[in-house]
Length: 169
Image 1 (cartoon, rainbow, N blue to C red):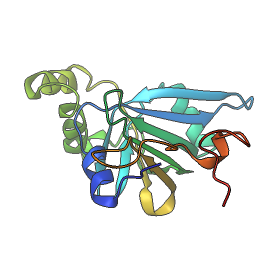
Image 2: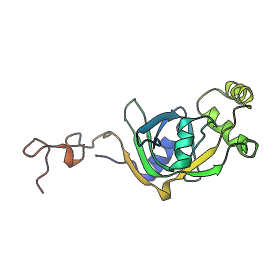
Image 3: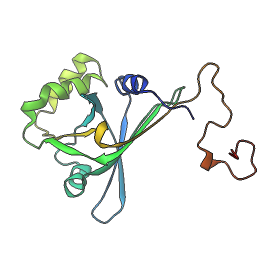
Image 4: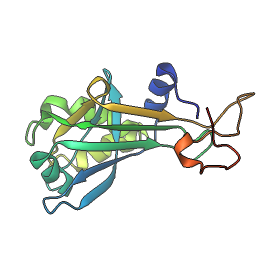
């Protein structure tokens, strides 16, 4: 299964419009998955829950997260991360990092709409969290390109014994 090299991974993480799904654990132990906007800067994924977000409460109690950043169109690039999110700015410190939030918003909506969105939500305080790739388990994947083999692209564990693509070595 082809993996993204670091340059391909970074280029993908900087692609505008790609959503991230964050998984965390509720107090009762049940999982919570939420699609969110993010930005990749300085070797880390930065993301911003609002003050009343359920997942913010989850991360205050238990900072462990799984992040899934993927795309629907070919070549189906995926970056999966597991680690502990770190608070960079807590609720009420929005003015200190509003320019970063502006950059996040511009990844998902046109610049004029992003600025309008920011102005319309100034009264919705947010926290800023990050997960550094260096501090996380990171897995990447993409579909084969060009003359790369397309047979047996999944991890060997997915192929049953005696099936066509099961490796025997």
